[in-house]
Image (cartoon, rainbow, N blue to C red):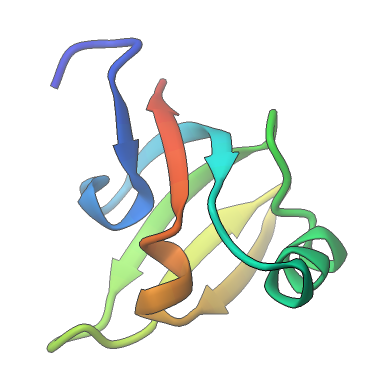
Length: 80
């Protein structure tokens, strides 16, 4: 994929990085993501995707986080 392409987080390939550009979710989920440091402008690396729409493991600021597939699908990143 070309640089500066915006995709949803689950479309990012494993071991690739992107910068969060947009999050399309409700207030409660947004607050939860903010608490985890997943906010626009943050660089994330997709470490692993679980099978069958399972959880998604991310690396953010040298920490590993796991979020659900549905929530990950609402986060849009610009490919780094």
